[in-house]
Amino acid sequence: MSETARTASQHDAAATAHNERMARRAGVGAFVGTTVEMYDFYVFSTASALVFGKLFFPSDDPTAGTLAAFVTIWAGYVSRPLGGILFGHLGDRVGRKKVLVLSLILTGVATALIGVLPTYAQIGVAAPTLLVVIRCIQGVALGGEWGGAVLIATEHAPPGKKILYGAFAQQGSPTGNLLSTLVFMVLALMPESAFDSWGWRIPFLLAALLVSVGIVIRLRLEESPEITELLRTSEPVKLPLAEVVRSSPLVLALALAASAIAMAGNFLITTFTLSWATTQEYFDRSTYLSILMIVLLVQLMVQPLTAIRSTRWRMTRAIPFILLPQIVLLPLMFTLVSTGNFLLATLGLVGATIPHAMYYAVFAGMLSQVFPVQIRYTGISLAYQTGTALFAGTTPMLCQYFYSRTGSVVPVIVLGIAYTLLSVGSAIAMLRRFSERPAVS
Image (cartoon, rainbow, N blue to C red; front, top):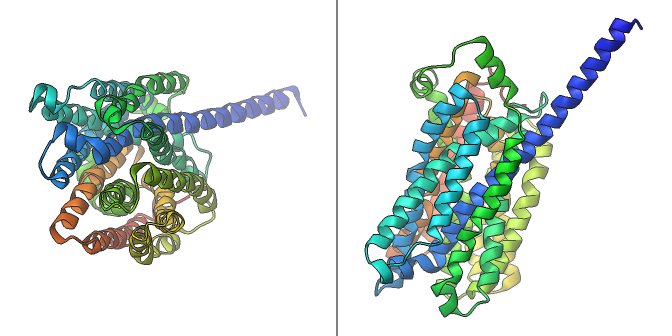
């Protein structure tokens, strides 16, 4: 081999090693960042189920207070599409990395502010008003976070592994939920008066520490190679939102509908059942949080295993196999929880979680490939975050409303099955309609 060829070979090997190192770093950065962001979001959801009703929305009817608290969860989701549009615009025009750091800082500040917020007993109606405002700020920040995290991972991914690397960002959801549940499980050991007085604030204040870790990791990332090349060779799209609506309306609609059970599943299985099971006294708060810890650990294991296996799947055939068992597993879950038996309830919740976890693991990677790179941040953020507003944010509220009106969980089960069927049909249609793109790898 000539000296020139040897030098070129060494250069190629060094470049490959560098790219692999950056891909791993991007995956870890996406995972840590979304973990912090989702911890912040799930802390709010858990506190809403446990204490926000009586602290910020006091009522003679505890169910009404809980329902009002669940409405504040929705407020955060309503604001997430705005975050997706705002941060997506910036991400498509200036790159992914800077936007990711900004969104993480904004979420951490908002979450910490909730930890020092006075309650209704202290400042009256200003308390729930401020809670909703801060929740909306938190929603805007997270609305920009998810799309950037998915893209920084998938656009660094080696060929054929976009779904696998997209799952790095998806792992942040169960990990953040697990951390949130763990913190509340420990705090649930406190006397109820102490927990209601100040203990509930601790998880929110911990956000500042977690955010600092996430920022350090994200500052070490390199910009996505795809957006770097695009910005080097052409002008960015002036109005990415308008271009998404003009050029990709069908994929946007299908992606939005396909997100239904991915968005709603976790909140139906964890947030609503936490309130329902403890209110009906099937379990005390500490015991049920222990069950949820096990469920989240299962989700944490199922998602990466699914992502690894998905590199060999034809997703149009895999989606029904993944999701349709939910039609049986959701009603079984409620039946087993109502027994009050720890083991049976755990089995029920784990069974219902597995289809959701499998679908959630592959969803980001699928979505990241159906929009062109120049509008990709805006496209996937708008689809995903509008889905959170329509499906995730409304789920605890709708479930609580249906249950309050009927005294039965049957309407809740029907809602979950409807979202499952909507996701199956829309996901398959999206993948088939846009199969001409280098879509599912």
